[in-house]
Image (cartoon, rainbow, N blue to C red; front, side, top):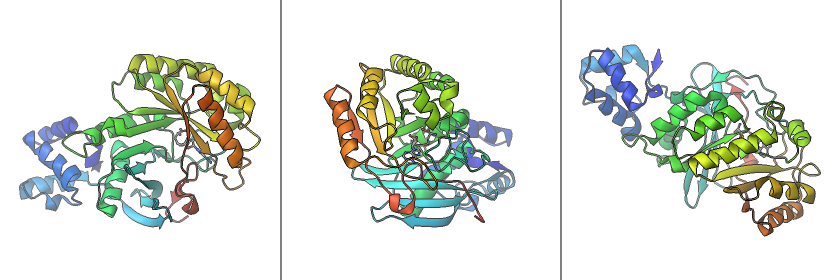
Length: 341
Ligand code: SAH
């Protein structure tokens, strides 16, 4: 059965026309889904009983069940959602002063194989559909009975390896007749799939691009992130510069600091050289150690030194606040889970 949340409004209009219905019904349904946030077709009371039956026959609503919910002392919540095919995914809600951010998963598992990330080493199952991505936000909003203001594609999976569905999800989330989340409040993070960075540059959507850089030499980056063997630092930086040229938007570079690996002054110097003059911002992440992982967190002293060196040399850098580490909800700690795992 088709998932009704896989369609943006214009596509839903097509669907309705194909069902022999009037186009304006699509907008009514869209409002029920994303403004009223109902969980059944029966609640769509301005539709005829006949149409509701037709919808039930053709579509499901993809309502997630919460299998597990954990709450951190800092207010971060981690959800394990049943995605209705025997698989489960993790989604995280982070509460900041400026609003509520949901960290969404884009795939069930990940193919990228980054050595420091808990999503690695578990089998890749499949990409999520647009509706399955959108439902993560809806399910969290329903649970907390509040609006989400920001979305980051930083959960499980490589968003640019599920390009079409991620773009479609962003458009659905952004639709003014629905959830109406501004694309400026949406960030897409990538390990560096160069051709898709060009595609994104040409989409004409205002979301923020984050690049997981993490190292400044090909040798080191390849040892941390196998994708670097495919698209090296030079190609990646060229794509980033072109992205900025095309979009006139700032890029956010993520750099996870691991002790005795990529956190010394030489690394900082090379990073300055790589990013000099670029419209960008560096997000320093104290690396979170994963089970059996060989990377561990830099010392606080080194993290501050690294940040100060960047700032003193004209690169704007901030240290990402760690949220949810006590419930394994911090960066890189999410894993694909089976319902019976
Ligand atoms: N696949 C995408 C998005 C998912 S990861 C990407 O690679 O960007 C979101 C961010 O968390 C990335 O910057 C990733 O490199 C980082 N990350 C992964 N594991 C981490 C860990 N153990 N500690 C800190 N950051 C980590």
